[in-house]
Length: 292
Image (cartoon, rainbow, N blue to C red; front, side):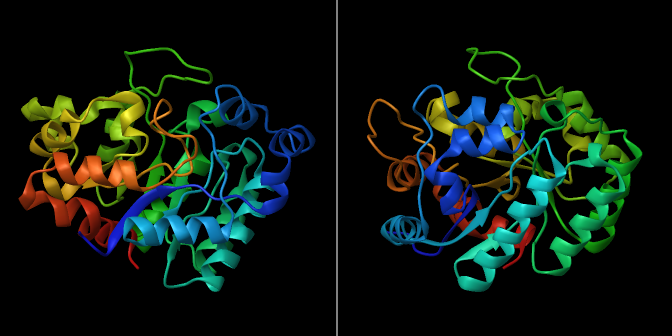
């Protein structure tokens, strides 16, 4: 069994949010997050003990704790403090990213600088269309330039443009992400959820040339694609541009899981990936992009 897996995309919340997620969201002005975690029973929750236990069971050496695309900057700052706390608590097990809300203006930049200086290894998960800002916003462009100069990656939510509708689904125009990659060629850009299908467009020679600094994580893969996606996307994007990510503690096999775990997706990935791509996708790429 492969050891030393790096899971590039999980989420973690403090216990007071786990205890009453909808109450916290209502009190703190986060209706979109409430919509995403409440309705269909896919969202599960894990405290530190359960998270570490599930990581150990699946052979996950480290996990990248993604932030969320909070609507209010105050919540970005609060959760960033928790991320830094969790990093200090278990530095050998976690890599943490910082949340940001560029629509908040200068305070977003200052809060983000603080989080990066305190140990966060990048920014994300961001969702401009849910948060209400543009990839051409001057505050965002300052953040992008800062991350590019300092070598920090940025992870974006990416939504498939076709397929089933689901609660909270918002389009993320893939052309906007491609334009961003061209404007900031030294910025490491990670597009979550198989990049909304963008790897499949890399059969287009022009498209492939624009995406040299773009990576794709596999978060929530079984909710979107069948297992052939692993082999096909790796062939199109290249094995060095795919990062294994689970989206834990989401129940990504809702008909098979009563509770989230890391085992089922790990087994799907190892069974579907070409053998010569496994180490890169399951470990090395994450270390190269996120450090640790």
